[in-house]
Amino acid sequence: MKKVLIFGVGGFVGSYLAAEFKNNGYDVYGSDRIGIQDSPDMDGTFVADLSDSDRVKSIVASVRPTHIVNLAAISNVGLSWKIPRTTVEVNVSGALNILEAVRDNDLDTKVLLIGSSEEYDITDKPMDENTKLNASNPYGISKVMLEQFSAVYRDYYGMKVYHVRAFNHTGVGQSDNFVIPSWCKQAAEISCSGKPGTMRVGNLEVSRDFSNVKDVVRAYRMIIESENCKEIYNVGNGESVPLRKLLEYITSLSDQPITIETDPKLVRPVENPVIWCDHSKITRDLGWEPEYNIFDTAKELFDYYVEIENNRK
Image (tube, rainbow, N blue to C red; front, side, top):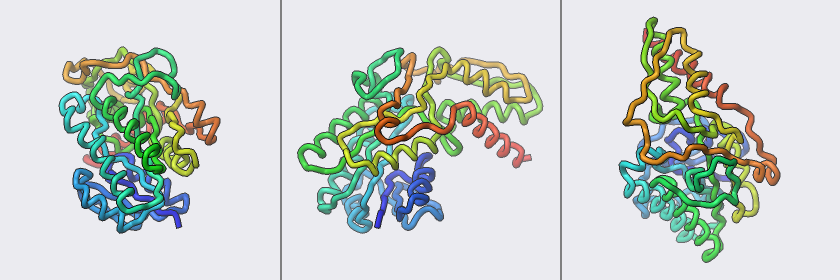
């Protein structure tokens, strides 16, 4: 019997990942630091903070999962600049508690840990898995540390620890602290207001590779189902879109004129000019390819926020 335990299941990606595993024949268990709503995709839920190693160990012992995916993280680059120590504690120490729980319970469990494109050195070319790692922000540095620990547990303890470098992904349910939901929400509110409005944005002189979350969770499942845990895969859409172009598209969805205003608070201290995924390795090895593009995803988000605004009237 295939049983997956998802830590951080209450976050944005969690519900999508739970559905992906459930639809592929798994019993699905989830844990989060706050209570989790009942879901038809979950066979059991737990409340736990990953900093509580005894609680994590108890949950792993209770479920005895064949697969574990850790989604629990501080995943906002801007926020990581404000709380660098907490970022490392959550993203690295929390994951280590999961690995130690598997080891202490003597389980032959596959564990997937989520890395990031922010691990890579700054470049204007597509990043493949051989691109130099040289993180330039606290979030990226924490993910490099996590990747190095993944190798330690594979090499020294013989554990099946997988690591993926995920590029930006979005979709309905993501916090509006992130750029695409923020823009879509602002544009929808202005559109529904019946009058012109102003959107506040950060740095538009960068390009980003955005994926739909549904593509990403499918990749996660395919990776953890593969047999070579030493292979590290990029997961991204394969197209780097200028944020200015994406903003122009989102504002074009509005029925009302929109003025753009740069908010200095939204500009990060250091920013990679281009982030661009080369996903040819996972496509070649596992047959994964993206099924969605960012413009369709942005339209889905915009329509979602329009519906919320209309329901308030």
